[in-house]
Length: 334
Ligand SMILES: Nc1ncnc2c1ncn2[C@@H]1O[C@H](COP(=O)(O)OP(=O)(O)O)[C@@H](O)[C@H]1O
Ligand SMILES: [Mg+2]
Image (tube, rainbow, N blue to C red; front, side):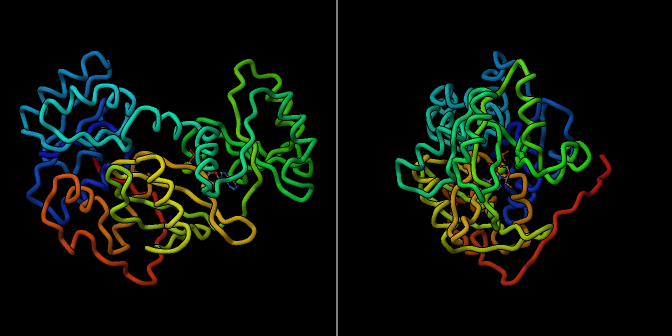
């Protein structure tokens, strides 16, 4: 009765979370690639067509076959939003993370996102749009965030932290090649590479914020946050919070975006200690599975909310105090 289509690998933990509380709920997961680990806890799985033209008939068949009531779309959000009324006419509640195409596109662009948050007076990292390498050079010379600030860049459209670099003249020229994890690049080297590149991708220029960083996972229905849990990043460790200024900010942000589903907001603290927004991800985060140790089962709460099940205190849970977790890489037999 519940269908998960292709999404991030954390789908595995989401399904496990639901099953731990609602073991008899029938869950189908689909993916366009061979991903047995994602399907491990589902009751049935299927290959999803890669070709978008075949997607609607695939969904129709799958929804009929398993009498699906709730469809959680992972990837292809735009396609699902464009076909929302046709999919819902098949008798399912569709959850994509968002309520319309425009808000998806705003969240997809870190510049448009920052401008919208500013409009609503929500603190967001100061963001300058860079559309070509020469402009980056000019802006960096002007030190828009002050002489003492460390400046950094990331792609306007990005994921997984790819393309995030701290830039400074003080950094040894070759450091970015042998110490990639430091995310430090020499300004001259970076500009040189960007000027050589024929397909310059727009960047956001920002001040580097020391942190700490918070990743706030939320169940949201039509912009209304049902529950939010923050994972506070402390070196390699994370701990949980269920209240505080970062959570208040994340809730306000999800409401402006009219988020709908399991979504994630990231914040970092400004030098004065107050949180500012980095981005909203209109999908479950990669780390949502860590919440299994928090006492709060957001995946189960998602199902409870969107299937309209009897509210269960167990699903909502309460925060277990003083839990610290460390993400590990593990191997499973497939
Ligand atoms: N202004 C900033 N100051 C410090 N760290 C940042 C800043 N912007 C991004 N980061 C770091 O880069 C990571 C990726 O940035 P984010 O905005 O989450 O983009 P994405 O996850 O889509 O790549 C963040 O988790 C954070 O650690
Ligand atoms: Mg991010």
